[in-house]
Length: 172
Length: 133
Image (cartoon, rainbow over all chains, first blue to last red; front, side):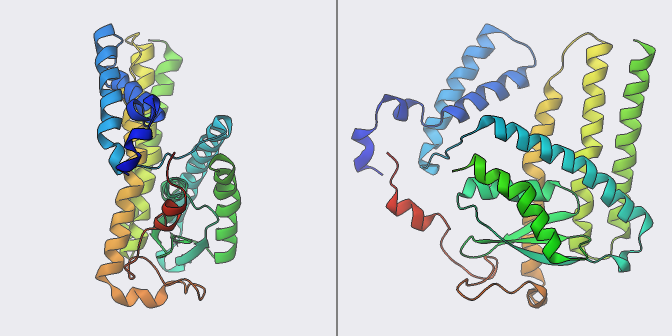
């Protein structure tokens, strides 16, 4: 990484992660809970300094495309969280624990970028009833624990078509 | 505060309370660590989410101020809850090695689950052929 330093242009040197900068400024403003010019300036300074200070830990830049699809994905994930909440609540209240078809399922991944896999695993964990527990050593399979999955193949197919297919379009 | 708004806020608080209660009940009722792990993910999403929505509605309608801290709380919860669940699951796999036999077997060229196999990161091989510009 060191010999490349000279060839870095201005933007790469001072704004290595523009999206991170934007996120930091927005989070800072939300933390303040009110808009003041001084707060905004301090947020901008932090938003520029923190990505520069941490850029060595994060050399690659995750490419994002299709922000609209990203929003659609978030909407679908939120809706699924709602539906799954109700379903798991019913499982807890009305089913005997012994009758639950609890199992591990292995989900083959087509996604390759670590950021995309992280997002997928996080979404699966947030949806009640499934917790992503481990990744295979080569990063090509995700281990998911299902609270109630009578059919492992169906569970995997649902997760793949609902989340992974959409993430494939967002992350190149 | 308008009557309907009070009803809405009460409804949100009651719903979130019910879900947190069911989540806690799940912790009591479910038999194993891995099944119990499913209960808190539920409480943090709908339970806390409902309470936070109620808080936003209260400040917006009652105090006439827009409070956005709730958005941050939601964001941080959604970021940290899966990470914690993942840590607990991995710890469980380390603590109970006999569980390894019940895990799905990976197809042949793959070496196994990363909890049991020390290996380089999946990115290591990609990094070399695409140095960042």
